[in-house]
Length: 465
Image 1 (spheres, helix red, strand yellow):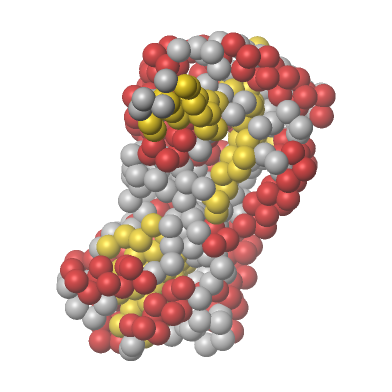
Image 2: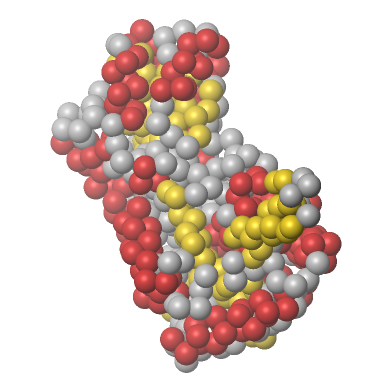
């Protein structure tokens, strides 16, 4: 771990497994309550001076972090692949590191200038943005480093300090990244502690944490929100998604197959904003099914470090068993398996890409977030029914609509209940575009000016003329 700029060990450690092989990648230190308190105290002490640092110096620090990430990208990508399972190539570990570098560089260049609300003979009113204090970050196992950067960099850029706790399934790459980033930062500005779910609960309850940023499941997000209530912490929650995609009858199945495939199966489906439900008009239903199956025949799945792998395993046994359970339930309810549908033999948590046809709302695979390489394909005849089904859940992260009539796709997009609605694409995120969910998929946004503002509080300076 890293506390106040120095490496910190532990009395107890937990094994971190490679999901491709089951082998031990390394041992993660398990922080004690006292060590968490030390990390928060170090961040609080550093905040007293970091909050006063000028904007240009903070920007320079973030640019220095870009240099560190660039220099060590290969090392971090390999460690990430080993503990998370994602392939080095394609939309995998090397892609994730490039995302870390790109987001950090963009955030370094962002500013939140003072806004003059009134400058009259009576008064001058200015709106200033000030840092909130110590930010607690809790990150998931699907995109461990990129999501950590999404939490860390805007916090530091706006003058806050950070204590981050990575997922117990993928802590090693974050521990290493934070140690490296500390070479570009004053001691205590960025601290990392590792441990199980109980450590995350203590972090979210800590009285000296001013803001919690959490990315993960809806049930855990609700617990984080409840635990933050006593101290009225600021919250940014990016929670689960069961993203619908509606395919209109004028869409070209062969043309959109690649976009649909990676929209659903990026990171082997282990992405909150991936397509989880595919609603296809009856006129082109079979063609869409056939096009997806055909595209999948050319996508290799294997060990993340193996040359040529483009899809990897499920990250952990719990998620692996959930995917199996959902597919078996779909079979029991009469769904038709177009490809896959059976767990692979051998080591690792590999589950093949599985497209499931002749399935309806009310089936667990449709109603729940599967978070794996499985896609239910639901037939519809009236687009109003598809829209109602798409909106008829507690989720509201992303959605998409696919078709050739720009007026119709825009009309459908306006009816979909989601934080982001894509047209003829899915999961296309960028550092300048705000991202966040509605309903139970989250509170607040990340990215862009609005995401940067979320790490600040407003101070009004109202002066007599």
